[in-house]
Image: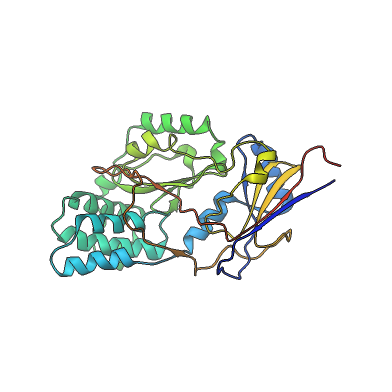
Length: 317
């Protein structure tokens, strides 16, 4: 069977670490065939790879530092400080970023700000999902009654049904403050303000801050496909790797495109490195969702470090 090779190189300084092969899939692919491919090839789903890489991603903090400097001078900028919170929550939270965010929100609550209610509610949401923060910062956990408050079961049920019309429920991951929901089919979202992340193998990860009601109303509308089109279109695709060093896109068992540092098959080394950095954003025109301010945080797509595509065309001999 013939293989068509397409290679584009971008001259950039990149990490020399190899990564386990993560696999996205096209919109028209079969999920069952895709799952069988992962099992037979030893590959990792894009969902699992993205979550793992997010868990070890470090942080650059220029906007946060600028906001804190302004806080200490007694004149914090509403725009600077809100933008710093946006950047801290642009990707699923991991332990270090949760602790930085919590400490930051405590300081913002004490400053005069039109967003104080938002900062307080987001801080309480962190305590509800990660009790260790209460011990770390020596603060009480929110009252049990508040923690057990739930959104209407009907709303949660409707959102799950809408999700299942787009994806197999077992394929997606829903994260709350960076913590994956273990049993989504039986889970009910808590009330309050949280960071929500929806990650699939076919669409760009989406991350938002707000109530579940706000997240549910907009999350499925704003998903952008990772690899639209058919097998042939993969030849011209600028794949979004989101910091992953090696990536495949599955269309069918005869059509798998590879994007990465090399064309070695079967790599089993670790995903990424903790030296990967989340850069703080400057002013952003993105539309976010907050309780008062509308904002949307989509997964941070990095530019291609190098692109190599090995594409097997169906019917080729």
